Length: 485
Image 1 (tube, helix red, strand yellow):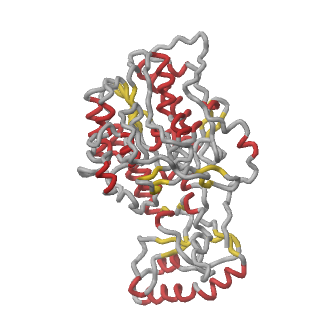
Image 2 (image 1 turned 180 degrees about the vertical axis):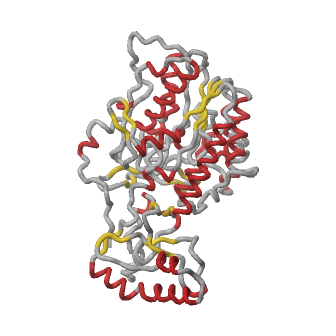
Image 3 (image 1 turned 90 degrees about the vertical axis):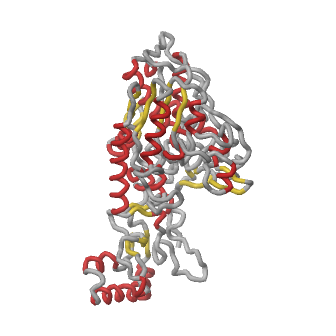
């Protein structure tokens, strides 16, 4: 059985027209009467720190065209009109995306829209982490960088890379083997900084709150998120007079977890009847026996009981919060419900048969979708609680002379009501919403332009500059990149 992409239109010719040009943001044409004014800010040496969004990561990978249209690069273009200097970035080697370590693929190619859903572009990554192109660079943001890695030694070292403890994108771009990201940022003597303080929430949420591969989501403690945030802010603000710190988006509220319905498994009446006769009864009877023994409640029996219907069925998932009945030979599985969220990354897996000799071994039907692809209600609550606490701590840590930009609020507005800008309505829908790239979390180039435009407005409001009057039009930036650019 092959599950087709649900909810995604096949009619996409309009999407490709006039939307796939690679824009050079260094080409700007402000109004001829515009007179740039930096206000009380000094943009002569602008440095950006952050994570995937800041690095230009889009469509599930880092590739050159999206880096060119990263929001810091767009900001730097407009800062250059008011005294800003050169802005350098650690460009990868191609538009395939991905990165290799010692010739072996560590992260794969970017996604594109193939007419049915996200798919990998053709070609293989050519960027090699061990081929160092040393910085420092003005864009010191690295994909997947947790807050603590901004200040941690060894994250850019070759020894750390070989031990699986380093960030390969930073290893490739570090100024030296012993450098730190914040140290490389300060080497440039910045006069203005923007900081998106870590990918912690996104790393945990986008991998299904499974702890893979970054471990649990820790706020407190010497290696927790807040230690990294505070350490980075204190180090930067001691040397840089002005800067912008952002809040962090809630990954559970993005297209990654709001595209695939919980009941996205279509079954024929024949297959549903077969499952109900052959597979469900032993498990359901075992649950009743566990209830009779006082091990679980009637409510848990109802939650865990399996039944298939003709039509759309809930995805079968693992749930570690269920009572452990493994001693009875009963796995911790159940059917998803409306309180659960299925990851966009489950699409290639759902409905597939990994073992051709076992046609009833179907992912999401008889084989539970792994924890990596699912957020349960408890996991969603955990993430949202920690996002709220973390953003409150970030807001309380903004130093004197710096400003707070509510990136989390912008994400939430896009998802809940949409944002109208320059004749475009940016929404939280995958593909046609315009803001989210093919991974459902990181922005398209047009989304990055929207972030830049809103940040320019915030900078102007804080320091009296007029950069937002220079004519940034988000329509000059594409929402997608086809295969083969």
